[in-house]
Length: 161
Image (cartoon, rainbow, N blue to C red; front, side, top):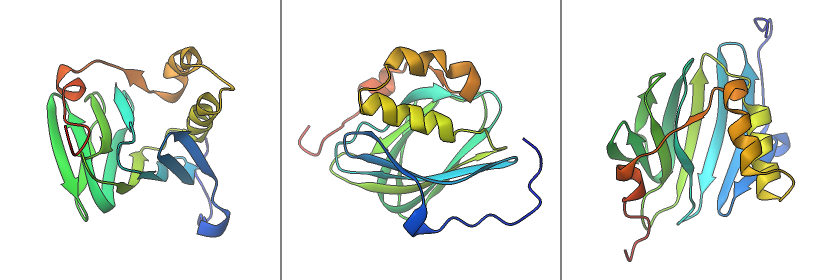
């Protein structure tokens, strides 16, 4: 990717939106050198993103509304409206709406990682047009490496749990 030479504007009305799982919508904003951004909207009980890490970029989260659980290493942090969290490269993390809540989150990567095709792949898996094996095979391309966490697996996922 070469450096952009102009401002980038994404209009809400025409932004590409991808359903990547039940109760989860990703809206693509910008994917250029230095910066990749999207919004993630989660209904209560949505699975969110599994445990993973990146080797080349910091991933950051700003909670626009609701509450978001984020695994950082082996600690779950609950973020509320207005909270910001940056997770450096190499640190395993995961995220989903907190039990009993929805979440709307601005998500970004610096430097940019050309991730829009990764999100599209997630949408194809959700639609039954691709497989989880395709996602795993894409790890080196999109710098999305999956990991395990007993802490994340054991967290409270619903309001009545």
